[in-house]
Image (cartoon, rainbow, N blue to C red; front, side, top):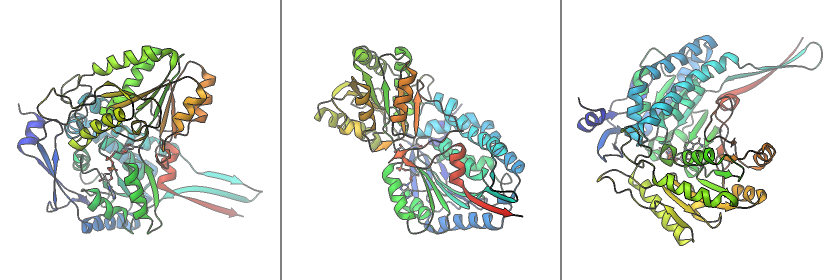
Length: 489
Ligand code: NAD
């Protein structure tokens, strides 16, 4: 039987946009999509031009202004969101495999997490809008102050490549749940699962023009979308510099930005932590998703009394990580998304050595295969927090370790970053956990857990890690207009 990968290599997919309920003719500039494991072409993306982006925004505008979607009942919207959830689950095996081939992320993870999470986002928002209400205040008898949350309008949703379906689904589900219409632009590196979602949903689930897809590079399609005067908001997930470029483009109009940007999260392990659990979690947090994760705990701080033991054990575990084909069961680290990302790891390892860091593992290409953008997971012991490897987001399987003595010092080093996405704390001392958690300048703090995500809480960053929060009331703030109506009898 021909595998999915063989089939894609023999006959690459042709992928384009989807506007007003219809696929866009495949006549745009061609962008080749490579399988990062084989380096062979698996798809050709047909870039949507500035004109197509304009058509997509107009379709979304017409659907918002004149279509039924924003006036649907909560029950109708819930049914639609659940239909999308069910469609994803019905195709979860196919989507998991496609996601793994396109991103290089192990299929075990895309199956257990990425696609489940994509579907769960729709279920979560279906349930959320069944519960969420407005607010009513009384000032004096006969006067009611009412706060309601109304649909905002046309939402531009731009996604990154590292968890393409799950992170884009979070935006689509939130925007639709609150009665908006959307224009979605996935990353040009990993557009396949989002495009497949549009095919799977097909026509009939949503009114025409409510959900539109444009595809292409950031320079052409992305720029046209972020500068378009017809959007009401833009929700972006991606790199900090790209976020700044988009904010500059949006500044010509008054549009609401929501930015989920980069990170360099500190993972602080105190000597009293449960050693084995903290060790497992440090590995997962730094290397899950091939280390290509915004919330990666890539800056590990370990307290001196356990430092020697931790360094030895961590090095051993990293060297034992199974690197390989993401489609093979048991693979823990697949290839990097492209050659540039693989080479970036080597450059940072060299930069670390140049700044007196010690290489404990990795630092070079993985030589187990003739092809593929494989790199060895890398760990460096850093003398202090000022090194480029401790300050810049590398976005790959690359962890730094620093040793600390005092709580005050480690908090100050953890906060010594332009980013503020997540902070991890490992300790059995609850008072210390609460104290350090209050002092960390990050949007999320995880205590004694590497990865739990509760969608009722907001996820987002302090400082250059972002603007706004995704999840629960954070998504409501992002995707609605708050209206106050004061009623006097
Ligand atoms: P990227 O910034 O290179 O690209 C993200 C998206 O922006 C892509 O769709 C791209 O085509 C588009 N884009 C690029 N230039 C644009 C422009 N001028 N106008 C409009 N769109 C443009 O990011 P990436 O490499 O895809 O993703 C990795 C980054 O994303 C990392 O920094 C990571 O930390 C971040 N990220 C953050 C979160 C979070 O929740 N905070 C989650 C995942 C990834």
